[in-house]
Image 1 (cartoon, rainbow, N blue to C red):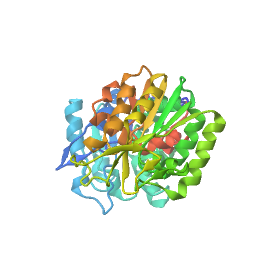
Image 2 (image 1 turned 180 degrees about the vertical axis):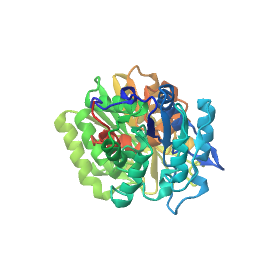
Image 3 (image 1 turned 30 degrees about the vertical axis):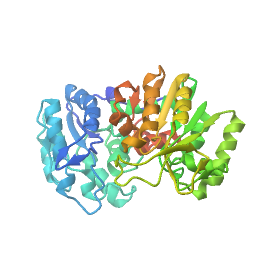
Image 4 (image 1 turned 90 degrees about the vertical axis):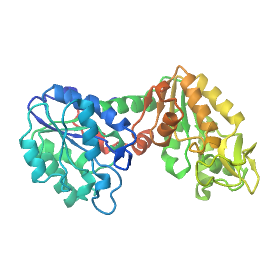
Length: 411
């Protein structure tokens, strides 16, 4: 999937008002940002536009915003962080309407190279609507503030939201350009090339809790990858489908036939499908999740006692999975191997992360919990690329068109 979309490098931005959709959905605690990864990821695009003399108007959502606007999910802390990182005051427009008079007055007063940040787009309440009247009106108002649009929010690119995809229609109508930012470009190059044109052998590792979340990903990657490794809670549905005893482990009985189909498909295509051979079991899920004084034992994955629950891959499986990675040239990993938030049940995820860190292969971490795991376990700097999008990465790995990518202008 070559990226044939216009990028920030294709804009003649001097003196132009450029609306940039970023992903500033950062974790906050008592009004302070606890992880600035997403802000740092947006800086190259913002700096490029500033240097080119654009009037840069930033927008993003933050949090889930279910019951209307609240100060706890305001983007004010992001404006403060950006100001220090850019060495320039980033003016914050606190208006809950997002695109009201405060915003239009601020934009009118901008000089070339200035940056403003609009309030949380979801405070408007129309951000998540499908392109219907309300979402259309919001998208048009966003476009009215700008001449051109840049989408650099890969984490939201799988949603056809007003500020992600619908706004492009109104930018086009006024003769403006819709481009992608550097972060989007990087994500598409890495994830797209990894899946569509990988250097082989190509190993894909899928973990996480539920088979249901990864149905299309498993199907798509079986066709693309040479080896598909399954770990995490989703593995037990596969094991049960093969007739194994999985005790109290997480199982989706509605997906047993699907798992049988995938096992048959791998065989038919001559692909390796690796499942855990041994499992770390406990009496039940730890509560709290990071409780360290839990009793564990290791059993064969297809012979888990009725009163035990599988919560991590065992040492034999860790070795087998690490060996499968050693000869790879491209590895994509999405989803942990067990309850990695617990120090006792993180060994499987750690073993896979270490195997990826030690390989010469191109290693791509598909966002979400896998990204959190490699960061938490200290392997982040050893990975070729860590995706900033959880859901977006998954949909990419399914082979889906992402609205936020699709909406940008072709070169």
